Amino acid sequence: MEKYKRYERLVALLKFFTDNPNKLVNLEQFMDMFNIAKSSASEDIDILEEILEKFDMGKLMTFPGAGGGVKYIPVSSLKSYVPFVKEVCERLKDPSRIIPGGFLYTADLIYSPPIVSKIAEVLVYPFIEKEIDAIVTVETKGIPIALMCARVLNVPLVIVRKDSRVTEGSFVSINYVSGSQRHIRSMSLARRALDKGAKVLLVDDFMKAGGTLKGMTELMEEFDAHVVGAGVMIATEEPREKLIDNYISIFVLKNVEEDKNIVEIEISDWILK
Figure 1 (tube, helix red, strand yellow):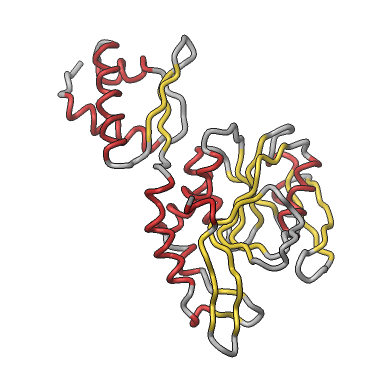
Figure 2 (figure 1 turned 90 degrees about the vertical axis):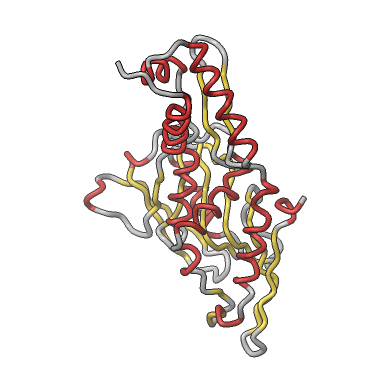
């Protein structure tokens, strides 16, 4: 079998880990991949770990024992994301983003892969070391954010529908109360989409009172799923009393005045601490 130089192995390792984030890999796999001894594989991992830390590109976690291995965590220190979050916040303050009804146009940000990937990394930061089996979202603009969150955690994405789909087989459907307008709405999820007892993280792009996330939480109860938490890109400051408690947001929308072209939005405190 061909012998590889160390720099070649390091490049291949970096590619492997970035393609397989948050996945525990036994050291023997690298030994077989490069036809090297365990000591050389360990040294490669140590060198790559130093490089990742030096350039704030995530971290490698080593788990000892027979069932152990190495896991790549793609999320860097939260401090490294502050300049990015500040830049996005400034873009969100642009009055041209105001949409009637007190909403902001965010599609250009959410549908930009470089931006939405970093948004996802910030959202999952508080949950990166928790056991999560799936990301759950509803079929709205939040899907790209949720998909990238699933990518970071290397878990499936589960999409809750506003109506049932015949092509997805039997489903569970519930009615819930929209938090902002107090309308009765429905949502459904295919029975085979989520395992019973799964640990899930709820993700959405925007939240006012939290009615949709509350509905998703109630739907998860039908699957005996445990909601680890919820993450949204933007949450409004009002109403202060949300229908859910266990959530984080990257931004807090404090005020939108359409007639004065004013957008008041801030970065959430937990990011700046």
